[in-house]
Length: 288
Image (tube, rainbow, N blue to C red):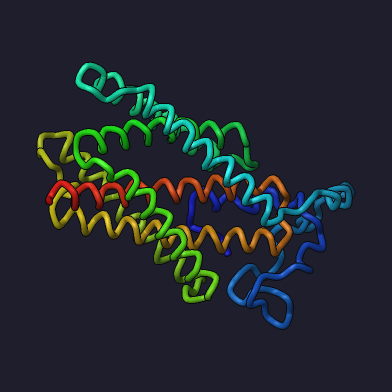
């Protein structure tokens, strides 16, 4: 199934590099004909028709495994965690340095965004771009987390990390138990919800920038908690789509390098969930 995650939407761009017989591996719930009931009508990673006489050479490419996804995801998330810790330690948020630290954090966030967009529209995964994104994203998260813990809610970062693990574990269990039906209707609904959510975020930023103070009120009080919970649910939905895309890639025999795209997509989703959990917990702690 084609994911609505902008990262995973690039999956299949290198489908002509996969083994022509990759369709012999099938995901759970395949039909009697061998194809998943709700997914591609044909193997999306098989050589395209008329691929040329060299198509047979491509069949020697190694197919992706779940271990590949786990290793590369651990590497990417480890990079985020390492740079977050280093920025927390090396970029203090005391009164004398908070402006400089915030400036570096905003700069890192912009660089991370640019790198993520470049990778999202590339035909092939680039480990350098993905790890670069992870490193700069970690700098941003480290400064934001340090400032939040120092000035607003001490201890909230640990709670947010545990909350992110809890959400991720819950989605994984629900996905493995097939409590969530991942089909095109689900993907379309998530895409529509994400569009509306991002439009509201953009409107909030515009109102804040042009003198409306607290913007639309999405960062405090009951409305802020509600908006944060919706963000968490949206992130959980994207995580379920990510799991489905990984399962399909393994089942259909995607090229091994596609594991980097899996790591990229999972990392961006987990960062989203962490930030939304951090916002909700910060509001709850600041209101007490």
